[in-house]
Amino acid sequence: TLGARVALVEKRALGGDCLYTGCVPSKTLIKSARFAHEARQTQKYGFQALEPKFSDDSFASIINRVQNVIEIIEHHDAPEVFEKMGVEVVFGSPRFLNSGEIEVALKDSDEKRVMRAKRFCISTGSRPFTPPIEGLKETGYITNEEVFHLKTLPKRLFVLGAGAIGIELGQAAPPSDKKSFTGSIMSKAVRPRG
Image (tube, rainbow, N blue to C red; front, side, top):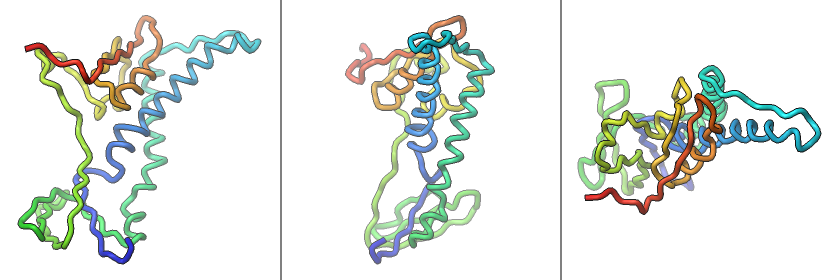
């Protein structure tokens, strides 16, 4: 902390987007897709061709693997890691009282705590943006916050958004067969009509 007293206020979980709904689960899903792709290529190397089958059971196993990888990595973002570096970790929802104070509604408690500082660094991350597209609300859409918790293999998956996670989800989509989903990517430049 370079000698400064530092407190980190987190509303949800340390590790945030990358660990739970972004980089880590997305790249783990891509690894499974890559393995399936390579299995189909074995004939090129003199082996009998393999054809991985995607079913709800295999998809559930892939999603379980994604969650297991998250569990393996999440200890690197545990509060104890930050506390060993001299950072106080506080879980809750903050609000500014004035330019030098915040009030934190502590998570899993009715208590509030006032914290004072000379400087505040706001690093809130982001949440999925739902574009104002006519009819979208009625589709039962999911975001990157839900996709890595699906229990069954979607028949189709249309990925709206060409950010890193959107492109990776498109790459990880299983190939076409009876129960597979297909990944499509729509540019951020596309605007709804009207």
